[in-house]
Image (cartoon, rainbow, N blue to C red):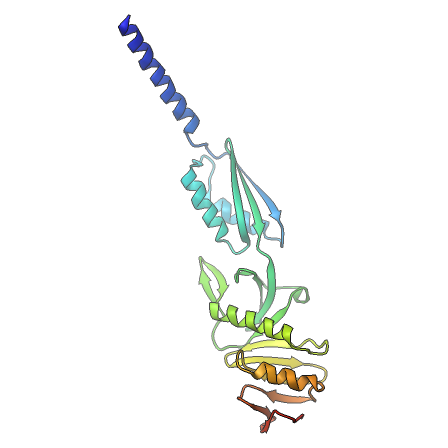
Length: 244
């Protein structure tokens, strides 16, 4: 009788272990579905192409694999965040896309920059759909992160500050061509033809704003990068109380 109970107990344990193994074994990948929850551009094809290079049919969908896959996906330029769900062998990838922020023109090439600083697209057809900045520095404004082009931190910070400065001053509805230089900023107006040079920091923007409030500058070239001075076509003049 005792032997019978021992054998029954051993059998029950074996059944429990087998059941645990069956229910906890990782699913095998049979299908991948992509769902764009928040769309901001035609990035789904790019995202799916890269994701499918990381996975293959029959892949064990272990927690470790899914965690690593999530990191890989969220490292892509076009992805703000993602969510992975497994149902049997089906893997559903939910994507929230990165929003485009502005166009940067450098060395005669156009780059669509996302809010994360990555290049989302090289070669932009409809530039008027976004704010446009020119980069005229001597070195590239980009670095390479995970194989993708990304704005250098210094350039990203300068553009952020520049955008803030532009929004603070009154330009009488005029939209300048904005260029980031090694030594500051250049604002080029077409009508009237005016070229303005400013520093990123300092009081140059305040002096420019003060003078422009008195009436928009006459055609010419103005350089506010010198402390307490404004250079007009090679001449230096005190900024206080003088218009060109």
